[in-house]
Image 1 (cartoon, rainbow, N blue to C red):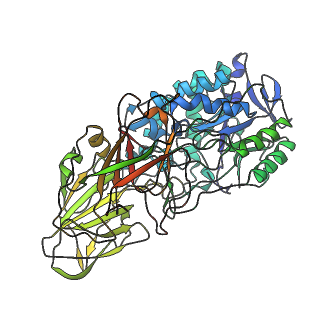
Image 2 (spheres, rainbow, N blue to C red):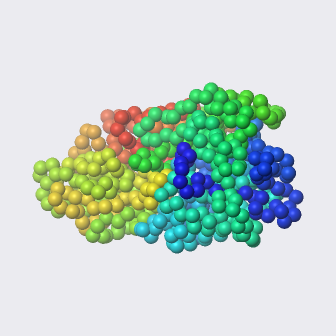
Image 3 (cartoon, rainbow, N blue to C red):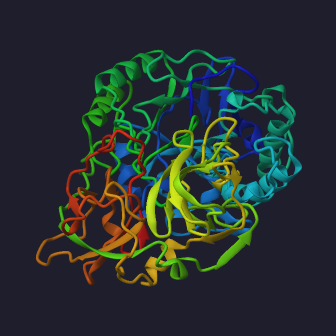
Length: 611
């Protein structure tokens, strides 16, 4: 997602007119170039759409969110299909549960919404690596989003799986999909590979229509504009007025304040565009949540948080907002909106304070967390080389020289991707961080154990740096010495927690600095009270153990058994003198972190689900 940029092809929009409606199908969706409009079943048509990402909303809430969009007056939705969300490893596909995109499309159609599909293969979207699978980086020099043979081979295999699944949902085949975007924001990408775009367009056309139309309109078929937040859309080529991303809010980054955009400005600009006859998609209409490790990052490196609220018309939790009703009032001026009640804001519940018990440190639990066991190498390996896509890897070596005086441990080539927690002989000594903190002083004797826990905070999703390797991606130095002889542990934290493998803490011999502690797990439980209807309900976690705030969907909570909460505190628990706690509230707090320095919050697990 970006402001419109010049260069190469900005956007390919595959017109379903060229994919076979002329073969006799009774339904059609096309571009009337003479009249500068879309035509649906032969009639002039204008879409008013909103973006919703099924990958950021639990399946149980899809219907609620889509109904609210429909009742606002939208006649279409726009959604991405993140490749890495479905092909988690080569040839292993997941299209069930929260990843059942076919069910999502059927639901949209049943409600009365058309679909603008954005299947990539690259989608951006503030999603890890822009939706591209991290396993593509097994070829270190791969040129993503280009005619690189290895990349094309992976794309062809993925699209060979996805596109036949999507074919029944094309509008002329009786489905809701009226347009399909091929690639995304390619004009801003350095490769500028026309052959790659031609290959993709031909791949889509042949898969869906069994014929290839070489009309000049296919190079590109159409272009649309991603307009900066409040600029009016402008005519592009012969397609008329289309704004594919009218920003209703903006994305957030860790350490920065939550982006807020005036409802008045959004409504005013939407009105101006609709008065011009424009087709508009509002990005986002609901943002949702980056569950697990799916958040992306921008360059220079800045990770996006778990919340993808976006200050959208529907909040992260699907709540109706002032902006929602302001947009609805504008749309009413241009066409009749559906009658009937709007689904209400999803109820929330404050489950209260959960007291947390201290468990093991990461290093103490290493044998339980590292299912694959240690890997030895002279120099550090990346996450991908260790077959670890997300989360954490612990790197271990020993000090090669005596460091009785503070000695700089450094990453001279900025090779900490993305944040590292450093300890010597079981005592926390400091933090290294990509771009920001490249050196920390350490002390110890020759042979002292040096542990570096490296956190993947999310891969860059936009621009030329999307080949975003994680871990220690270059050598570290200790004074004048290059460190070698590493032992590396890939950590399966999710699985270890779900299997209940973590034990209680043990006394530590090494004194810990007052401002820092070893990465440590904490655990607590809470029971949902009896006698209250409609539980479990959504909640938000905040207070002592976390910086930041995240929605906890009610569907992952249990009324039949205690709900387990596990926190991985990475730096320092602010409760060393008393019991730690997590507070579950009915109202989220979306804003900057407590401290001014760039801090990733604690990882929190509820009922064996990573959030």
